[in-house]
Amino acid sequence: MRNRLEGLTRGNQFYAARRAEHATTDLLPFRISPTPFPLTSEQHSEIHRIGADVSDFFHASDALYRDNDQVRELLDRGKPEIFCDTDRPLNYLFVRPDLIITDTGFTICEIETSPFGLGLAHLLTDGYNQAGFETMVDPAILAQHVQNGTEPTGEIVFSKKTDAYKGQLTYLAESVFGRDWTLRTVDDLNLDTQLYRAFYLSEYMDDPQVRLLVNGVAHDSTKGLLPSLTPHLEEKAVLALLWDRRFQERFRSQLGDATFNHLRQVIPPTWIVGEEAYFAPGMPEGIERSSQLASLAKSKRAFVLKTSGFHGASSWGEGVTFLHKKSGKSVAELFMGVEQNLDTLHVVQEFHKPTELPMSYVFEDTVVTIGAKVRLTPYFSLQGKLLSIKATGRQGTEFIHGSSDSINAAIGI
Image 1: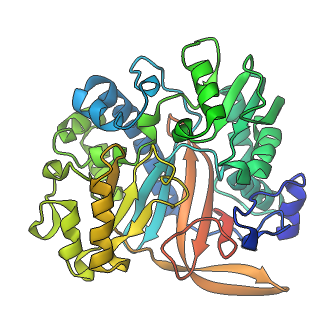
Image 2 (image 1 turned 30 degrees about the horizontal axis):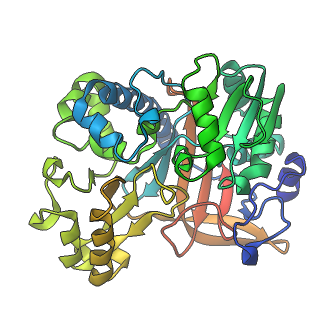
C-alpha cells in the first residue's frame, strides 16, 4: 500500500520535518495501514449526523458573532481591527471536526478549517480505492466540490510557518483544485487571481508578507480569498459558546432541540478562561477560577488547556496541555501565564479518554499490530456533506496527529 500511495504523490513529500534531527527523504514520513480503518454502520451514520450538526453550528456561531456584542468582544479579543468586520461574508470550502474515538462514542476535540491534512485524506482515499478497497467516500467527491467552489485559475498560498506542508499543498493544487491552480509562497503572488490561504491569520502579527497580502485583499471585494478573513470562526473558543449559559437558548432555538442536545453529547464541556461564571454545568469540585484546577488531585483534573486561535501556539498541538499529566505546581504556573495574557483567548475542555483500538502497519515486510488511540478527521461541506476522511492512530500519547510513529489510513465500509 505504501508503494501505491507514494506512486500517487507525484513525487511530493507530504510533510517536511521542522527539526533537522527528524529530517527524512520519505515521501510519506509516517506509517501506513495495509487496509482501511474499519467502522461500524452505526459509526458511519453518526459521522454523517455530526457533519450535518457541526455545519449548522458553524453557521449559527457566525450569526451569533454578528448579532451579539458580548460574543464579538470575546472573539475579537487581541485581533487587529482589520479582522473585526461583521459585514464580511462567510466563505469556507469545508469544516473539519476532529473526532476522538472513546468508549462512549465520538468526541469532538476541535473544529478546524485549515487545509493541512486535506491532501493526505484525499491521497489515502484515492489510493485505497484504487487498490480495490471500498472506502467511506468516493475520492472524486472532494475534487468536484472544490472545483465547484473555486475559479478555474488560482494559487494556494503558503507561508514560512506552513512551509513544511509545501509538498502536500502542491499535491492538493494538482490533484484536487486541478485546472490552472498552482502553489505560491506568500511573497511571490499574483493578486489578480483567486487565492486559497494555507496559512494562519495569526501570522498577520509577525509575518510582514502575510500582513501585506491580508491588507491587499481585505478591502477589495474583487479579490477572491479563501477561506474568508473571519478568524472568529477559527477560535477553539467557539466550542465553549455552546456551553455558555448566556447563549445556550439562542443555540437551542436556532438549531433545534435534537441538534443542540446531540452537539452537547459530542462536544465535551468547555469554557473560556475568565468566563467561568457563565459555564452552564458549573465549575468542577466547586472551584470558581480555572487556576484553582491546580489545587485538585490529578484524578479530578481531567481537563485540557488550549490556546484558542489567534496565536502562534494555537496550531499543531503546540498550545495544548493535558492538565492531569502535570503536577499541581506546573498547572498553577501555566494559569499564571494565561491570566497575564488576556489578549489571547484560552479554553479549558473536559478530557475524554480515547479507546485503544487495533491498527496495523507494515515494517520490513511484516505486519505489526498495536493498540492505538485513534482520531478521525472528516471534512464536510458547509452544507454537511462528507467530502473526505482519514484515520490517524498513535500509541503512548494523547497527541494524536500525523508523525513518524503515527499510523494513517482511509476509512473503510
